[in-house]
Image (tube, rainbow, N blue to C red; front, top):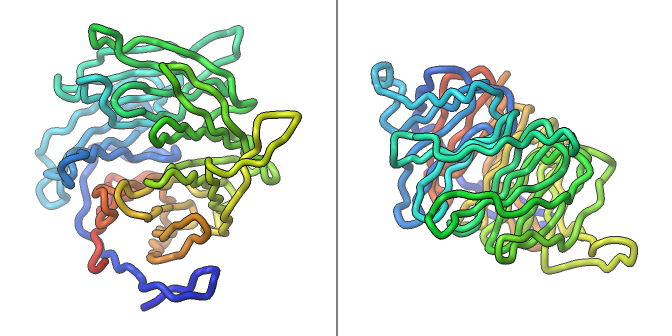
Length: 345
């Protein structure tokens, strides 16, 4: 089977099949980007999943397959407040599970039975901050967290290895919805449809460029590819690509980010995307019941796999191998994380 991209050339389709389902002792909430996968940089194996169930984060492993999962223990992290996003990362020498919620930031130590090691309350009545969402990490050194008033907070380990607050910048005029990082670049997006490119230097964020709002459709999810391209998903089902290396000078504001590729990827809101760490693949899911995998470049986005599960509102997806050979999805009100594996590359 072949697919045709925007330039009329043919590309062989990838064929994925369902591998297994991971049982969750709870149900998946209707929040965007609702799955996090812990993938080691050195081992191309899956270490763990985390999904949001209202005020609880369920942490499960590959041993929790449907057939024998009933008695397998799971970590259930009760935050006592509505959870908005989760991310696995390393800060200093600590393997962390980072959780954002309606009260702020919580960091758990994965090597100490998910002991809570740091909390940061985002509430600031003067700044009208109500909740946190959007998480990105930089090479084991810095952690960035978005907020409902459009600000971004930066955290990192001190000389003793303890997580501390470092910086705060107001880059957005609307609630931040998602963030992603690549090397020293940070892409953040918000409910107004604006995307901001910033860079981190010695713990301080500096704004580099911002995009247009494209009709005011909200951004819902964003990813940075292995070559540094910025992919942004929107509530209208569109995916837009931006290249941080290409800017248009605007004398009245920061340099503007030009859009390099646009595609009508889904019929409804895109709820999650994932970029493969070692391949030019982008995974997207939507409220329209479709899963799609795209081959991306600086000039094209080519569909290489699609699958529709009827009457399913997907809310999360992530590649679980660095080369894109496996991925997982979550769906609203489901008790399962579904894993897929490629039949041919």
